Amino acid sequence: MNNRFLAMENGGGFAGGVFTNMAIYNPTQPIEVVDSLTNQSKYYEGAERSVRNPVALANQILDQAPENRILGNVTGSLLIMDGLTAQTTMGADYTNSVRQTYIPRSSPLGAEFNGVAQQKERALQNLNFQQLLTATPKLGDRQELEVVGGYEYSKFTNNGFEATMQGFVTDAFQFNNLSGGTQTGSPVPISYIQESKLVSFFSRANYGYAGRYYLTAVVRRDGSSRLAEGHKWSTFPAVSASWRLNNEDFMRGSRLSTLAIRAGWGRQGNQSLAPYATQLLLKTDAGGRYPFGGTITNGLSATQVANPNLKWETSEQTNLGLDWGLRSDRVTGSFDVYQKKTKDLILTVPVAQPAVVGTQIQNIGSVRNRGLEATLDARLFDRANKTLTSGLVLTVERNSVLNLGDAPFIQTGGVSGQGQSGRNSQRIIPGQPLGTFWGAQYLGVDKDGKQLFACKSGSTGCTNGQTLSPTGDDEMILGNANPSFALGLRSNGAIGHFDASWLWRGEFGRTVFNNTALVYSTKGNALQSKNFLKSALSDPIGLREPAIFSSRWLENGRFIRLQNATVGYTLTLPGRLGVHTTRLYVSGDNLLLFTPYSGYDPEVFVDAGTASRGIDYLTYPRARTFTLGAHVGF
Image 1 (cartoon, rainbow, N blue to C red):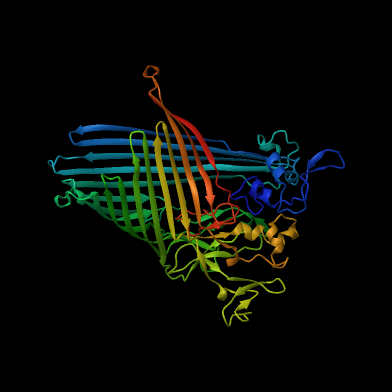
Image 2: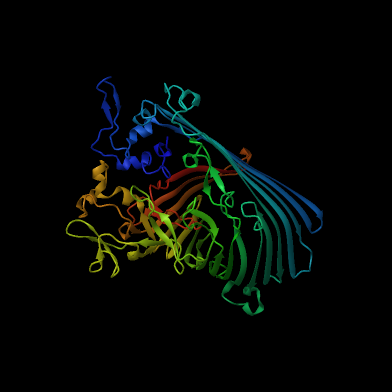
């Protein structure tokens, strides 16, 4: 049993699930056929194992995943004395999820294993405790001071199990009787538990003078169980200040209703890695079998190399800002610039070979981010029965890898698909941003339909700057997954009892690697009886030319998206009903998308914490959702 057979996407493996097979299933093949022996209709399953009948996957495989979640917080406050308050908060977030799957014997897929049943269960528990002590001493009419001291404790637990059985004599029990199968050929059951703790001591002081000058200082001392002994604790200070010039005497009579400048500096820590990442991890499998006395005996093999020096990834950020407003803040705006330097990056890097495990989690190198953000907001209409406010946000950010220690580069962004093992689409390179695509420059095809790539003079097979088989010496920077800039446009307004709001968002100057196209839109899919794009027929490339990662598969990933739109209507009801107001509304998310990208959605792998980004492979498209609701006021 392999998870790739499950009717799911985003991790369904090369064969994918219902959605993927719906796109690649040969439309000239039938969905159902008549069995010549039983004269009964059954789902058709072709000889090509990398393509499955999508209708059979959808209708025959039972796959359900119920989830229960309980969240709760309790807060208590005590006024110890005038100006001194204690507050205690306890919270819990508990999630229990179950995944139950059965592939029946009667299905072409399940017939290979005489039915396959799987039960998975996972319990996530996040417990939090926070104790605050707040002092607000009186310093006179012109001064304000607030001092907060606190302690916080968090514990995260993730435990679960997975059991899979095959070889059933009947489909009647589905996944409800795993003992009805046979252990022969079935995967070994799996169970696990992960725990981590985070403890913090912190203090914050806010000081204000005359409504003009403000100063904030923060210091944290955090300890994480996920990091190595001797490196679990670190201190993170921060300080910020602002000056409200509009409250100064020399600003009286100015057209500026608001004018303030801000500055800040702070250090932050990141411990975003799995529990036990510092330790040697072992498993029992075929790789751990050893001969003892002529007998093959099950043993252990390493899956993770220990790192006793793994510590906090730390960032230091400096920012400057300006806030302004005109005409009693009818028009407002802000401008911020910042620089953030992150060192001791937590990355998975290759280790010297030969080695039991090819990679290790290490603190290596540093990255710098510089950027600016500008906002502009305006109240276009502000009347009793008609209001309209709009705002524009511009964001520009540039990041650069400063160093990687002794490593000249780190390969990342693995290429997926048949024949792509060991290939990468990106490199982390000093002097370049994260998300840098690296590979061969595609030039087209020759008269025989063979792919041509740019090459460097003197490299193997290079003739007149062209080659059929690019080497590592021919590879170059091909693009970057990060946007050059991003824009946001938000508006909200009301006319009478009606109100509406909307948000447009866009990113420009970004590159996306269409890994899905590399696998499924090449002419060679015809040899595997797969459906593929009609445009591939007119492609002059040869039928048997391999799919090679190159600039051919990189696309412009700019987009403009209508992220959200909401329309509401407010009813005013008689007070004797106990309900004073009721607002009915309908809201939609991900309503429109404009992009030149040929895939479903260019906004993929956008997590800034991941080294690889901008790679689209069998990514399930974002849902377009609609919500109908009511807000009732008593």
